[in-house]
Structures are given as C-alpha cells and as structure tokens.
Length: 270
Image (cartoon, rainbow, N blue to C red; front, side, top):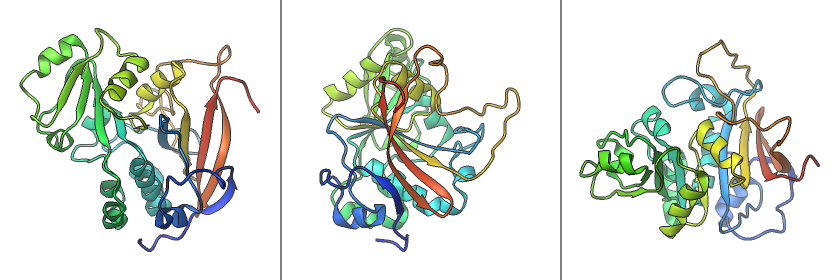
C-alpha cells in the first residue's frame, strides 16, 4: 500500500463485524468495514456549512478535500472496492468528464493493490430520464448500465458503445425502487451511489438509502442565492414531519477532516 497513514479511529461499532476488507485495506482504514450484501450506501464530502456540491467542474471534491486529499481518495476507493455497482446521475457524468468510477482510478496510489486484491471494478450505472448522454464519454466507452425512460431509450438507440446496456424503467422521473430493481436484475447487489444530491434525495425519500459515508471538510464554503451550491440532498423536504434520522456508526480522522459513517433509520433520533 501507499504512504498514507492509517485513519485514526474515534468511534467504531464494526470491530467484531465481517471480513469485507482485506488486511492491507483494513490496516489503513483502522479496522473492519462490513456492509450487508444488499446495502445501498452513499458517499459525500461536505463543508462545515453543509455545502456538498459546487457549481464547478468535478463538483465539490478538489475544493473541499484540501489537506486530506489522499485520505479522502482512499475512502472513496475503499467504498468502490466493496461495491458491485456505482450509481450516478447523468449530471454527475457530465460534470466529471473523463472520470472512471473504479477504486483504482480515484485512489491511484493504491491502484496496483486493488487489482492484486481482486476487486475495485464495480459496474457503472447511469440514470438519465432524457437520454442526454455523450456517447464519447470515457466511462461509457468502458461499458455501463444506462437506466432511462421509454423516450430516453429511443433517443439513445444505436448511439451508445456496444459495451453499454440500456434499460427503460419508467416514463417520467425514475423512482428509486425501479432503479434499484433494474440494478439487482443485472446481478449487482451492493450499490454505492455517488450520484449527487438529487439522486441521493430520491433514494432517501423512498427509504432506499441504508448508509451514508460523510467526509466533513474543515472549511466554510459559503453560498450566494442561485449559485448552484447544494447540500447532501436536493429536491425533497423531510422535516418537520418526516425526518430521515441517522445513527453514527463510526468516526475517523485524518488531519482536521472527519470521516463519518451513519446508518439511516426512520425511528427518530437516538
């Protein structure tokens, strides 16, 4: 493994759980990380004032990572390593041109290690209601599962690389249960979403999001009206009537960055 120092553990309820991580990865993470076989989990980075998406190329990542860039890339790679599929929206694909959603691509210092451990190449799943995709996009050239509407499938017919599969799963806004059903029908069980606040909001609204991995960056990002900066979820409102509460499962630190893991629940605060 690379020169990254192990994350410092502040809290962890996974010490006796599972064996999802090979020993070299567990040593850097600071312990075990077990996920249910059918888990749906999200990974975000956010500023202290709650900004998770910037209206800029490549989203919030580089601006918010700061001095913990290597640690954040490691956690992103780790979560991709454990996934069968990585779920994103078409907006994320357009904002991060040339990106590949694999462990080794985001965490290049350890790319050889991921390959040696036999993982880190989850299936990319792209959600687009309109079918507005660039067929030349590198991630599509490498092959992806594209979930869209009937009209979107018509727009994409014959335009995508042969390595892609297109599935029509609705006629309007695609519901989370239809998206996950289509992914599971392809044999992919454990799903990581890096799809942005709108897709995360849809999953949370339908109770389909099991866990949230949240990196807290020690920076104030600020907002102006209409600047496109959003929080972790967008397009849905939960409180005051129906909040999505979470239980803190682990907390780790690298420098002044916090790496938090929450289990989502509807049972109220603990």
